[in-house]
Amino acid sequence: MEKIKIKQIRSSIKNLRSQKLTLFALGLRGIGKEVVHQNTPNIIGMVKKVHHLVEVTKV
Image (tube, rainbow, N blue to C red):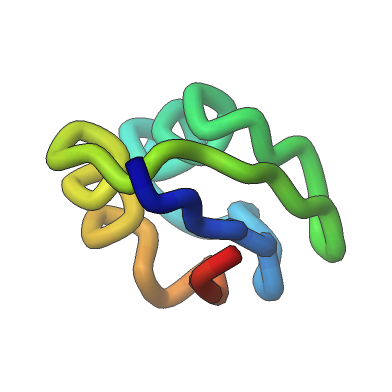
């Protein structure tokens, strides 16, 4: 399966609690942190929820 790299580029302060928890579930703990995940529908849905806080690239 294809992998994607997700990088947090904006702070989660002043965002909804559910968006903060989504970032936490993705493994992002702060600005500049990067994680690599499989390109699955679950991960894509989570990324869409916080699309304004993250940057996604293919690995």
